[in-house]
Amino acid sequence: MYTDTERCVRAVRSKDARFDGWFFTAVLTTRIYWRPSCPVVPPKVENMTFYPSAAACQQAGFRACKRCRPDTSPGSPEWNARADSVARAMRLIGDGVVDREGVPGLAARLGYSARQIERQLLAELGAGPLALARAQRAQTARLLIETTELPMADVAFAAGFSSVRTFNDTVREVFALAPGELRTRAARSVKSPATPGVIALRLPYRAPLNPSNLFGHLAATAVPGVEEWRDGAYRRTLTLPYGHGIVALTPHPDHIACRLLLTDPRDLTRAISRCRWLLDLDADPVAVDDQLRADPLLAPLIDKAPGRRVPRTVDGAEFAVRAVLGQQVSTAAARTHAARLVTAHGIPVDDPEGGLTHLFPTPEALACLDPEQLALPRSRRITLTTLVGALADGSLRLGTDSDWEKARAELIALPGFGPWTVEVIAMRALGDPDAFLPTDLGIRRAAQELGLPSTPAALTARAAAWRPWRAYAVQYLWTVDDHPINHLPV
Image (cartoon, rainbow, N blue to C red):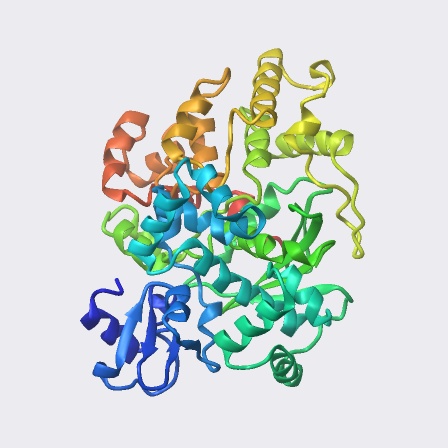
C-alpha cells in the first residue's frame, strides 16, 4: 500500500487507525516518522514519504514520533494472511528467531539461502532481516525500560542487543532520547505493576474486536492447570526459549491488557508475539467483515456482532495434541483427557496467584508415555502416539513458519487424521485465515438454520465467495448455536 501515495495521504489526513501498521509516514523536514492515526497536523504532501515498515524508516535515518509511538502500532495484517517466504520470515522475526539464531537460522527454517531472504525482504519491506530485528529489539527495550526496574545493562541483553553501547546508540537513534530519559518520562505517567517482576503492557489492535468468541472459546476449552479464566482475564502458562512464563490477558474497549511474569526477560519478545498470535490481534476486521457481509445469509450475523477474531494457540504442537484428544468427544471430555496428560507429564510451575500449576507437556515429554495408560480407544492412541513421535523427532513442524499446504499434506498422511482435524489445526495452530470446516457438526447445523447448503461439498462450493477469510466465516457460523464458546464467562 505504501506505494499508493494518494491513498496514503487520504489515510493520514483522516487519522484512520485502521491503517496503523500497514505503512508509516516519514516527514522529510523534521526527520520523524509516525503512524497514520497520529494526532499531529499533517505536513505538506511534498514533505511526506511513506515506508512499509518502521525498520525501513529507521534505516533511512528517521526517528520515531514521541506522541503516537509508531513502534507500538499493530502489525501488518498482510503477514498473517499469506504463506509465502516473506510472510513466514516476518512471523519468525516477530518471534525473535533472528536474535536467537541469526539470519542463517532464519534462512534455514525457511529453506532458502540468507542472501535470498535478504533480497526478498529488501524488495518488499525496504529493510533486511537484521534491520527488522533491530527495530524489534528497540521496541522490546522500550517496553523493558518503561515497565520494569531492571538495570539498563540487563535490559540491553534481555532485548537482544549484543552490547550496552549498541543498546544506548540504538535507543537514542530511534527514540531521540537516552534510555534513562525514557524511564524518567515513563515514571511520570505509567503506574508500576502491583506484583514485583510483572511486566504490564497494552496490546493494540484494529477495531472492532468482539471479545465474546475470542475469550469465550479460550475459557470454555481451557485445560485445568495450564489455563484459567479469573477476574475477567484469561490466564495461562507459556513454554518459552529461555524459561517459562505466566500471562494474563484482559479485554478492554481499545486494547488488550497484558501482564507477563517471566523467569527470563529475554523471552519478552517471544511472549508478546505469542500473545498477539493467540488473539489474532494483527487482523484487519473491517476488510474481513466487508467481504463476508456480501453474502446476504451471513450479513445478519456480522452486523449483530462484528469484529470476530480466530482464537489461535501459543504452541502449534500443543494444539495438535489437544485436537486429537478432542476428536469425536465433548469439550468437557477433551479438557479431562488433556488435564490427565498435563498432570502426568507437564512441568510444574509456581503461580504467585494460584490456579496454574503446570506447563503443557512437550512432544519430547509425551514421546515416552505408555499408550495403555490413555483412557482412549485403541485407534485414538495410535493417532496420538504417531503424532507425538513425528513432532518429537522433527519430521513434523507446526508453527508460524510452516508452509500451510505442506503441513496439511503431512498431517493427512498420519493415521487417524481426517479433514476436520487437519483443518482445525490449520486454522488455529498454523493461522491459515482460509481454513474451513464443512464437516463440523456446529457448522452444518448453522448452515441448515441459515438456509445455506448443509452438505460438505455444496457448502464448500458456496463458501468459495468467502475466500480468503473462511476461517472467520467459521467463527460467525458457530455463533448460531448457543454454546459456551460464544460467551464471555461470568
